[in-house]
Image (cartoon, rainbow, N blue to C red; front, side, top):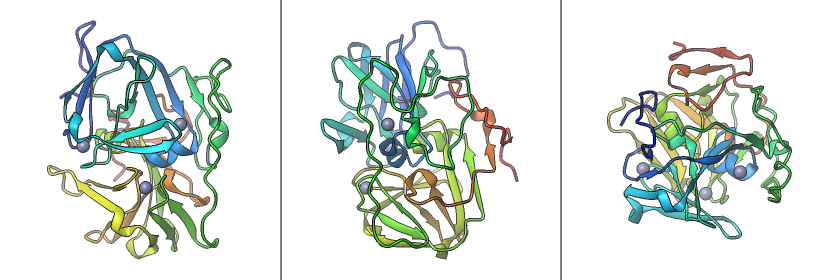
Length: 292
Ligand SMILES: [Zn+2]
Ligand SMILES: [Zn+2]
Ligand SMILES: [Zn+2]
């Protein structure tokens, strides 16, 4: 596998795979209709600021391996999100009207197209900000009549900063102050969240209290990594807090939060590995590698 920055023969299929590599696919170019979706469902299921999808013709699309392992979550009427049950990455779902939507964060190659729009921007949380040249729409561009998804209803009593997965099986509160929030563009993070980048906040491990569904949290640790692991809901695949007992910290994917955590992302790290289709233009500090 390469990181998508190498030269690819013109017309070669565009490859994608989940974080653990168990599920892989390819699609014939050209791809089309790439967009950043800020709807609350994408935010929750990716655990990220937004999800980015690109569409392939079903005819030229196929799984290279792992298709039989794919798990599904019915996220809304007639829409099933597909994911890897081992690592939690989102993967392409079922073909609809001859097209397959692929989560761009899991692509191993440059898709050859660039995002046409930010959609459902009205659903964006206060900590999510962008200023790139891609046209932004409160819902969808004219002619695409996809109804906006209502924000998920509040749950439980207010107090601390609440968070939950898309299916609401996993619910938690942050009860101490986060010390840091930042965007990470490394390849592992992009695959883990199947998105352009992660936006995580960090706090002491004891500061996260699970109120429901802790037994539904599955963790996948990358075998070759010292620490890198992801935690996700086994029912819906949403990113949820990962408690690192070793390091005494909790890593929380901000897309899962239901309340404003007040802290704002301070920087972008590992931008040297950022997706070729994503432009960073929000004025925050940029670090080509880590910042420590
Ligand atoms: Zn996987
Ligand atoms: Zn969406
Ligand atoms: Zn869930």
